[in-house]
Amino acid sequence: MRPLLLSILATIALALAGCGANFDTDQIRLCRQAIPPLNPPNARIVIERTTTGPVPRALRLLYRVQLGDGVSRHRSIDCLFAGEGSGPGRGALIGIASDGRPMADASFYLLRRFYLENRTEPPPDPEATSAEDLTAIPRGLAYGLQQGLSALPSAAIYSLLAAAYALVYGLTGRIILSFGEFAALGALASVVGVALLLSLALSTPLSGLVVAFSVAILVCALHGFAMGRFVLRRLERASGQQMLIATIGLAIAMSEYLRLAQGPELRWLPPVFNTPIPLAHAGDFIVTLNPLALALAVIGLGTALGLVALIRHTAYGRAWRAVSDDAGTAALFGVDARAVHDVAVILACAVCGMAGVIVTVIYGGMGFAGGFSLGLKALVAAILGGIGSVSGAALGGLCIAVFEAVWSATLPIEQRDLAVYSLLAIVLILRPGGFFGDGDLTPRQV
Image 1: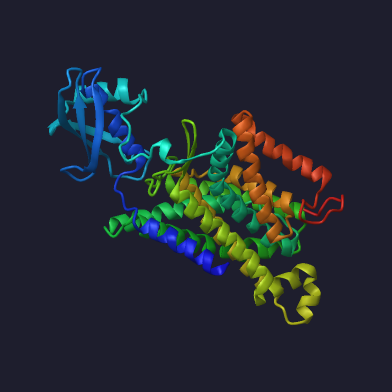
Image 2: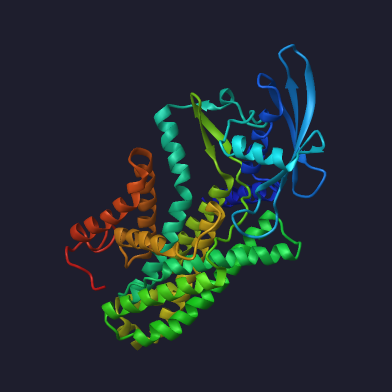
C-alpha cells in the first residue's frame, strides 16, 4: 500500500513540475473569444497553435480562417494581459493586436463590451480531447463522478478545520470559534508570501505553492501560539460560555485585524495547473479532472490522516489521549497537560492555515470576513463526526463535503448553507455525540 501511495504522489509531483504555463485556461479561452468578431460572420476558424507573444504577458494564437469560397488564410491574434497588483483585475485583458497590428482603444472597448462580456462561444480548442477518444459511461454515473471530483477540495478543507476543532475540544471540552479566521489569516499570508516571491523574480508555479503553504503554516502557528498563551491559558478554569464569548470576540478582532492588513479588497492568486484533464464522457458531457484540485485534495486529506496517525501512534498522541481521558491522572504519570494543550493549539492553527491556502489557490482568494461561515461549517462537520475525536471529525468533514455536493447537484444551491446548518440542529437533537462519537442522547458540555 505504501509503495502505491508513494508512486501516486511522485506522479502528481512530476505532473505539477511540468505544468509551468504562463497563461491559465480562462485567459486562453478569453483570447479565443476575441477571434470571431475579427473575421467574417460565416468564416470557419481553426486554432492551430498557442504560444507566447512578442512582449511580456502577451498570448499569441495562430489560427486559420476558411471563407465560403474555400480560400484559407493564416492569421494571428495577440492578447495582452495585466500582470501588476494582487487584486481581482490581475490577469485581465488590456489589449489586442490582430496580425501584429494593435487594435485602437475605441475598437477594443466595443469588442470587450459587446462580445467578450457576453461570453460568446469561442472557436474550439485544438488541444481539447474529443469525446470519441474517451471511455463512454452512463450519464448519471458521469454526473455523479464529476460532482465527486469537484467535492474533493471542499472535503480537504472541512476535514482540516474539523480536525482542528477536535484537537482542542478533545483536551478541554471547549469550542474555539476563531479557527475560521485562522484559515482567512492563512489565505492572506499565502498571498503575501507569493507576492514577496514574485518581487524577487524567483517564482515558478510549484515554488509559489510551496512558499504559500510554508508562510501560511508559519504565520498561523505563531498566531496560534499567541492565542494559546495570552487568551486560552487565562481561561483554563472558565466555563464553556465564557470561552465561547472570548473566542467569538477574538474572531471579530482577527477579522478586523485582517481587514486593516489587507484592506477591503480581495487579494488574489493567479490560477495555475488548472487545465482540465478529460477522463470519460456521457454523450456531449465530458468528465474532467482539475490537476491542481486533485493535488491540493491529496495534500489536505493526507494532512488530516497524518493528524489521526499522530494521535494514534506517537508519544505526543499517547500524551494527548491521556490528558483527554483524565488530565489529573496523566499529570501524576509525568505528562505536562499544559504543554500538550499548547502544542494542540499550535497544530490546530497550522492546519487551519493550510485550509486557507487551499481555499485561496482553488478559488482565487478569500476575504477577511470569509472565515466565519467556513469555520461554522467545519464546526458542523466536527460535531457530525464526533467533536472529541480527531478521526471522527475528519470523517465529518468528508460527510459535509458529500452533502454539499449532492445538494448542489439536485436542489437549489442558494439554500445549501441553510441545509447544512439545519443538519447541525438535527444532529444535536438526535445524536449530540455525532455519528462516530458518544451515542448517548445527552447534551455535551460546551
